[in-house]
Structures are given as C-alpha cells and as structure tokens.
Length: 526
Ligand code: GLC
Ligand code: CA
Image (cartoon, rainbow, N blue to C red):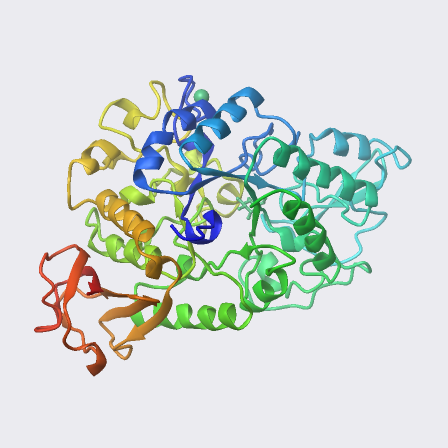
C-alpha cells in the first residue's frame, strides 16, 4: 500500500480491558487475555488497538482514576505482560494506543496523599487548592466540584468524582512529571495515546464562576467557559506533540470534553494533536438526511483546516449502536450504521463487540456499578450497559471467563457470539470483516473524496468515494422498503462491480437502481 500511515489509513479498535477476555479466570478481563486474542483482531482486519486504562486503580471510575501511571494493575497483569502484548501486537502489524488520564489522578495516588497531608509538603501545590470555595463550579458526576480536607483546612477541585482530584497543570513540576509519564510509555513501545478529557487540563486562573445555561443536571446548567478550554492549553499540546514527534509515527487523539468543530480546529493539526474525536454519530438518529448533514459539517471543517477526521459509533461512555438503532435482535439497521462508519473519509474507531452487534445489558438498581448511574438512577442508569463481557462463544459466560464475570454477560450470547457469527455469512461480524478488508484494498475508501449523490433522498444515503483511478459508490438504504437511487448522468453507463452487498451479487443498480430494504451496497466502477 502506498504511503500507508497506520493512524490515518487504518482502523482503530477500542478494548475495555476489564471486559475483553479473562486470561487467569478471576472474572476480570486482563492483558494476557487480550494477547491471546490478537489473532482474532488481526483476522478481523484492524490496524490498532486502544486500551482503556489498565493502570493501578482503586476503581472508583473503573480505571479512569489512576493511582500509579507507570505500572499495571495486578488484576490486569504486569508490566511484563504489557511488553508481551505490545510485542505480539507489533508482530501482527497492530499498533497499540494507551489511554492517558492526565486531568486528574486517583485520590489514592501518592502525589495526592502527599499533597493533602499539609499546606507545606513538597507536593502542596500539585493539585488545585483554595481556602474557600471560590465559585459555582460543579462536578460532572454530581455535587459541587470542591471538597474540603481537614488536614489542610482547604478545598481541592475535582471535575469528576471527589476521588478524582484535578492536578495543577500550571505547576512546572507537575508538567514535567506528567511528560515523563508520556515518555515512559513511549519508551515501552506504545504507538500512541488517547487523551482523556484533555481540554479541561487548565481552569481559569482567576476561578471565575460560570454563567448559567439550560440543562437538567446541575453540571449542565452552566456554560463551561471558565472550567474548560483555557488558552494555556494550546502551548501544552504543542509541547506534547514535539515530544511525540521525537519518536517515529506516534499519534495522539484527544477526547474533547463537550466537543464542537471549533474546538477540534483549535486543538488538532500539524503542531498539536493528530486528531480529536468527533462524537456526532453517537447521538444522531437513524436518519440519512441528518447523518449526511453531520458528515458534511465536519467534512467542511476538517478540509478547510487540513485536519484528518475521525468517526465513532460508540465507546465505553455511551449506549451501543445496536441498542440505539436495532429492533430487538434484528441487525439490519446495525449493519447500515456499521457500513456508514467503515466507508467514511476519516479514521473509524470500533468499540469491542460492535462487530457482533452486541447490545447493552440492563441492570437492576442494586447491580449498578457506575457512579453516575448510582446517583442519577432511574433518570440515568450509568454506563455499565455498554461494558459487559465480550461474547466469544456459546459456552458458560460467553467464553469470556470460566467464573462469574465482573458484570453480567448479555443473555443473548448463546446466539450472538464470535463463533456463531463467523459461521454465518450474513452476520454483522462478516459484514465488518469484509468492509475492513475492502478498506485495505481500496485507496478511495481510505483517502478518496467524499461526494454525496442523490442527496435529497429521505430514504437512502449514497456517496462516491473517489481517488485517482478509483471510483467507489456506497449506497445505504435506511428504510424497510425498496428505494430508488437517482444517479447523476455522468455515472450512467460503464460497468460496475459489486464489491460488497447485503443482498446482491450482480451490479444491477444502474439499470434498475433499486435498493432492497436496509440494503448496504458498495460498488466499483470499472
Ligand atoms: C472520560 C472517560 C470517562 C471517565 C471520565 C473521567 O470522559 O471517557 O469514562 O469517566 O473521562 O475520567
Ligand atoms: Ca483476569
């Protein structure tokens, strides 16, 4: 492949380590479990894995509260297991992305234990301390963002749980210590990072109160202008990028908190992050007109600013696409969304189990583990639903573990699992695999222009992906009825080859351009 850049031309697969595969049979997924399944990922056709946090953690936010940045939680394995995972992944041409949570640590991190102990210890200024609560800032997971510590007679700031104190990025020693963490993982062979809520690292230096806004949770009843997106951030991103660029082909993708195109423009580019997530597909309804409008908004922004786009259907924080769009166990709509994701111009991110159309589990109140779910139930049931164990086969616990897993397996695992879907040519798995392999084969799918056709249609979404010498046509029927695709006259005639279709083998779209209900079809003009 010409000039293939893994993070730009490849597809990235997110693994929630706790839920992927249990190597030592204690009910919790781990790094050796992942290593055991690298052949599966290589065969599926992904180019990189992003591992949600595997560092030591008291688990208040399931790993997003880190108590030691340069180690592996014993439940997930050891540093040696990590090295082996990287080595085995690289053998299969799979790159490894680590998740860095650098806005806050766990309250059990030695930095915080020291910082909270007195007003004059060496790390006294490593977190954000105030004598009085200075403003109206709220914590995302509920309650005020300031918590009192009697030892210091002061309050510290936390954007998330009280057990997740925000570090003081303005302190040069903190900055150095954190950049050393980045270097530590680069030296261990990590190919890139996903940066958790990177745009909240800096808060207003004067601690001004946020103006109010309309919303349901107290956190949403404010405009977040003083606790997020401060001007000190961009110089830090440049420093971080320079560090990454001192190693070959390293990558950083940011999780923009309260994401907008303007923020993405500001934070990504040649001398800052390689990419920042675009979350539009996680909350747009199953509607071709709306989805196309979102794609075009971001296409324009990314093109004008020379930023490489990203697309995701879901992650460990939102309901799975199959639960949002599927009807019962029917996968027709799930396949349409998967095909949409994998035929975009931009880097697609897959979330583990999405390739099977895994559904969210539903839990009773006393089974809920996720802190915001406990707090806001029944209005919001938290994020456990999309974190259930990977469904490998029809054996006990879906082949994830021989013992009871940390979260229940979805009861549909008996039918919906890797083994069953591999054997079924019509499965979501086989659609995903086929499209991943097509992406490898056709430059037009990876990098070609995105050109909508018949875009006034309310029923289908169709577009060309075109690069020099290659024209591909993607047609997706969003309706449970046949629909006609009106192709522009310059596309009439010529021979078309069906590269993939959920329904047909013959390239008959041009003579009678009718798509079957929920048909996905990718063709190539010969
Ligand atoms: C990010 C993570 C989420 C976590 C939060 C706090 O949004 O994706 O899972 O709870 O940051 O670290
Ligand atoms: Ca385990």
